Image 1 (cartoon, rainbow, N blue to C red):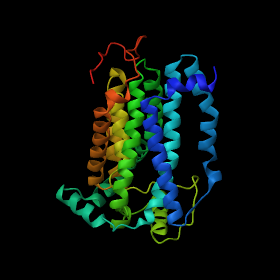
Image 2 (cartoon, rainbow, N blue to C red):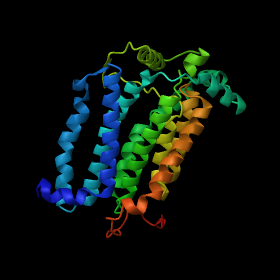
Image 3 (cartoon, rainbow, N blue to C red):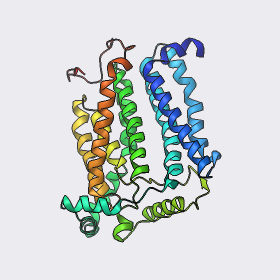
Length: 317
C-alpha cells in the first residue's frame, strides 16, 4: 500500500487541524527567531526529526492495511513530537518580547489565597523523603503521557487519542500566549530561596533572552520558561482527563497527576496561582475541543471491535 492510497483516510479534519496548529506554531517560532536575531541549532533537532522520518512510513503502512488503531497511535505521537519541537522554539523566540514581569502580581494573588511559597518549600526541604517523592512525581508527566498515548491509541474509539492530542496542542498554544503577555522570573528568583541547578539554569536563560544575549537555541539545552500558567499542571490534568473512561487506570492516574500539580508548588517551580491558571487552561482546551468534536470526527464510525475500556459504559459526548 503506497502513500497515495493511505493518505485519503488519514487526511481527515482532525489531522488537518493538527497540521494547521503545528504550522502556525512553527511559522510563529521562526518569525520571532528572525525578529530577535536568534539562531537555531538545526542539528540539535535531529532526534525529533529522525523519529518522525523513521515512524511516519509505518503510520502510512498501518493506515493502508486498515490497522487504524496503530496508525492513529503513531500519527498522534508524531504530531506531539513535531508540535513540542516548534513550541519549545516558540517559547524561547518569544521571550525577548519583554512584556513587564508579573511576579509581584502573582505573589499578591498567592497572599490572597493564603499561600506563602517560601514556607511551603522550606517545610518540604525539612522532610527529605517527602521532598524527593514529590520531585519524582513532578517528573512523571512524560511516562504518563506515553502510557496515555498507548492506551488511547489501542482503544477501538479513535476519538479518545485524537482529542487528547488536540487538548495538549491547544493548551500549549494558550499557555504560551499567556506567557508572552505575563512573563515571570518564577518564585525561586523572586523570593531568593535555595535554587536547584535546573532553576538556576532557567533564570540564566530567561534573563539572557530578555537582554538579547541568547544568540543560539539548541534543543539539547532547553529549560521550561513558562511560570504562569503552570503548563505542568495543565499537562497532568489533561492526562488524567484523557483516561476518565478507564476504570482501573483513572483513579491512580488522577491521584498521580493531582500530585504533579501539587509538586509544582512544593518543588518551588511555581506560584500557587500558577496551578489555578493551569487548571483553567486545561478546562478551556477541553471546552474548545468539545464544541468542535462532532465536526472534527465526522469520519469516525462507531467502534466495530471490543474496546479496551472493558465494562465501563461509553459516555455520550
